[in-house]
Length: 87
Image (cartoon, rainbow, N blue to C red):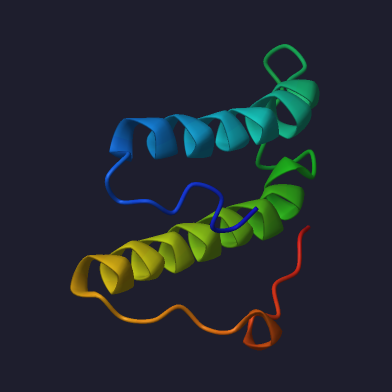
């Protein structure tokens, strides 16, 4: 899932795949935590959002590195070298 759609020649398709994944987090976590005018900084929202934000940033960095490697012709790491965990 981290490098789902890792073809630099299909940027719109890949951006759509990644945006859909991020939107899933928005629907499943963010909107379920909103209750009226409650302050999200004090209801535990921020504490739960930190690991999600860190995961999404890690995925973005990995995807960018994958694209750059493909653009310059570098080989992809072997599957056994990829120790990736999902949240």
